[in-house]
View (tube, rainbow, N blue to C red):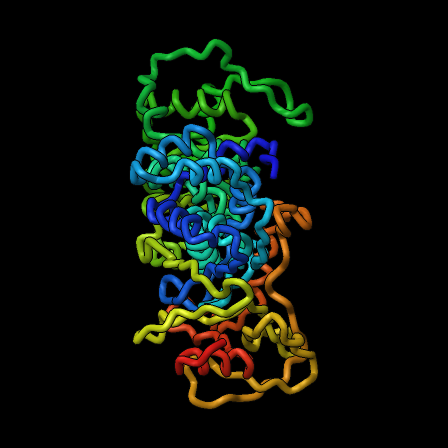
Length: 491
């Protein structure tokens, strides 16, 4: 499997971005002669984040990029040899040197999909030793990306469709990789852009920015611009001396409002003039506070207002109220650090080996896994609204639109029936035995898909506080397998 040759390749995770116990288990599989046993793992989460009823699936592009470049280099193998027992058979390290993901198959939710507890974000199958080694890096790549995308989607729902949202949390992020991930997946979740220039270069996220106080305070007022003339569009007349024009306009506006002209600090005026000369078509003025009145001055109506300053969900709700004159909202810490819930809590669990289902049995029902290779479907009503997601064994025929289906809600004592108008397969085949099956959507396409996905969710499920919980159910055959294995029966 050749490494992907694109600018993003440098950002892919490396094989040793993992936990040591993955390597010790790999040694155990190899020593037991089971390295090449065919196995399947599922990556999923158990609870929706932030007390909500949905999550957005994200990170698939990063996972595919990682798989396509997966190869242990000599330095990687030498380091593993230094941390594993000194009597480890050298043949094991030769086995590691030959590893790649040419035998790995991945099914996954498309990026931007609505995701719910227990429904796999990824299904990863292939040689047992290899797919075990993939656990930690895949969890790292999917969990944070999905958390950020979901957090951004919640903020977008609060802001509404009209406000522009700018992610500007790089300086507050958990390191450069966290910053790049946050900038990328906040855009997927519904933000309009980022201040992170590297995210623009590597991921194609639209970049935008304001200016800092240091620019304003760096001017004393004695500075003389080399060329004070501002070129106007041809239809508006010849170039003007901007500093002189600023003073004239200040007097004119204050006179119109019946206010006494208050002379600004010379350095502030010089700073704004200098910035306007540098960006005549994209001028921004930095104000710590503002007070807006409905002035009857036509040109003021076209001035956009951008705000930032530690904005979270509560502050955003106030800024998004009807009648708010704010156009752009910059959000940093609360989007990149997810302070309400810092981890999605994804898990990666074995569901089959050698074609035989495997199940984790535990006294905690929430941590009990669902055995066997599975398919997942989303059932919708005649108006397109979502009814529920159903998990079934892969060999079962898919549900049919218009036909009654008997299912088991998770943890329920009795089954129920549902008759869907539409049936949507959820898990698509992206990588088959190391080969990419179809082009991955662009980040912009995944962003558009995430907004479409959210629009199909009912208002009750979309509520951010005390939402209705979306149902994930099991087919009768899958429920019967769970019951049999739970009772100690053989597959």
